[in-house]
Amino acid sequence: MSITYEDVVAAAGRIEGHAHRTPVLTSRTANDELGAEIFFKAENMQRMGAFKFRGAFNALSRFNEEQRKAGVVAFSSGNHAQAIALSAKLLGIPATIIMPEDAPASKIAATRGYGGNVVTYDRYKEDREAIGRKLAEENGMTLIPPYDHADVIAGQGTAAKELFEEVGELDYFFVCLGGGGLLSGSTLATRALSPKCKLYGVEPEAGNDGQQSFRSGSIVHIDTPKTIADGAQTQHLGSLTFPIIQREVEDILTVSDAELVDAMRFFAARMKIVVEPTGCLGFAAARKMKEELRGKRVGVLISGGNVDIERFAALLS
Amino acid sequence: MSITYEDVVAAAGRIEGHAHRTPVLTSRTANDELGAEIFFKAENMQRMGAFKFRGAFNALSRFNEEQRKAGVVAFSSGNHAQAIALSAKLLGIPATIIMPEDAPASKIAATRGYGGNVVTYDRYKEDREAIGRKLAEENGMTLIPPYDHADVIAGQGTAAKELFEEVGELDYFFVCLGGGGLLSGSTLATRALSPKCKLYGVEPEAGNDGQQSFRSGSIVHIDTPKTIADGAQTQHLGSLTFPIIQREVEDILTVSDAELVDAMRFFAARMKIVVEPTGCLGFAAARKMKEELRGKRVGVLISGGNVDIERFAALLS
Image: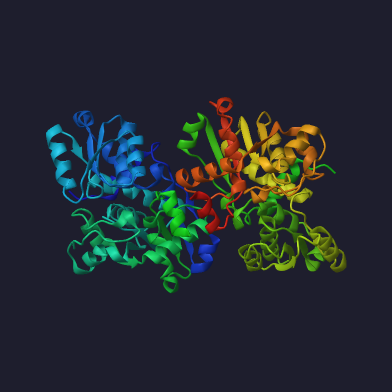
């Protein structure tokens, strides 16, 4: 079963009135720096602070009566956990989130704050996927993975759909890449609404499994990468996301953690917005392609703004 | 000559296409906290990072040929300096900005970056107003003060005009108060577009000259107050701003520096925006009036986002 732009359109209908239609921001300073016209889709201003809400809400809103009663289970230490917990709360579905026992207290608290039932595990000894599957099987719960799921991919594609609807066709589009849910969803929207747009996925240098996979033609697995872009610390692309990316994306680029901090500082100092390290990937990559982008219309997807404020302050100072 | 809403409308025409029409942001978390519907007018996303651009551009765009040639002079260590420098550059008018020699290097650099000719003075020995007047007289330059000027007031009123045009009438409106340019301009727009709205000016506790003036009925002068809200470190209201405020405003409220930091943290952590301490005054005051605001439609003017990133990080950690 292949995922199409029609699925993105259907997802947009389901999330309407629940997800924010986030603003598209512009900055004369950014335009001057790149000699281009840049449109930032600000998913840091999405509900719970990241695009992940779109895919989670779309997936959960398709549950049938039985699934709703039994509940959802998800494993995540980051934005997917909060997205599932909040979506489940809004839809009246019980949610169990499997998180590492050493996850930041603030993240566990945020997930509980959205009404999620948090189950912790020892990430050095236990396998979260096995725990998730066991919980799902024993209790009839539905497991929603963070990216490799048709409804999640379709939901994530709605951000790019909104961007093109608001600003029209673009020449280039930079999207951050972890497991590929956002990038593959964005690809579907881009091909439908701005067919000639060159689409780039962007990863942290240390976690370039996507780039390796793209260039070798098959999914490459890596160890959990060391990078400040915690939303892109995935070890491999998904079996659903990879083929879409492989088929439609121009290339996969990488940026260093130092370049991410520079971009984060730019967002805070010049655009007055808080962007988490992973959300800086797209703009950091665009800044390295100045020559090519001159005079072009460029889209940049800012994926989220969920960075611990103390950590944010430490990274900027 | 009294200033009216017609002047605000004329100013809106002059700044159109030059100033940003800044977004109105909402936050479910803020709404839940106050049990109200809150609309934040985000002037931190204005050009050069603060509402001051509106008044400066409006004032300079009214210069006649002779004034344009001779140039503008302004004294300011903050946002007004940058607003005049940028507006002058856009209009092709030479600008001289008088700044204290110990002003932060970043602010002097920013003003120069906008093309302003910076003249420094010793703020412990010299009088900036005298220097400004002397420069103006000797060279035929026009002095534009930071708030007590009809065109500045009318320009600042355009932010509130945009807010009411976008969201309709409001029950309450909180606006920060330094010299009163923003508050008096906002008053004109409020009375025209949302006549029953209760309008509050908000000052830092340490610099409550406006509150003292409002309650005593005449302009009270104070020493430069010690507060993190550097945009509200004015010593007195203006002879043009005070009568408007006195006539139309419900009351002047104060908040502590600690309450400003709390609001700043809320903006960064929950709304993902960078707001300078002065820009936090309105929301900090609204949070203290929870009971009264329940169920109401509330406007909050966020005046700017120009805070040194290192200082921002230090205040948040």
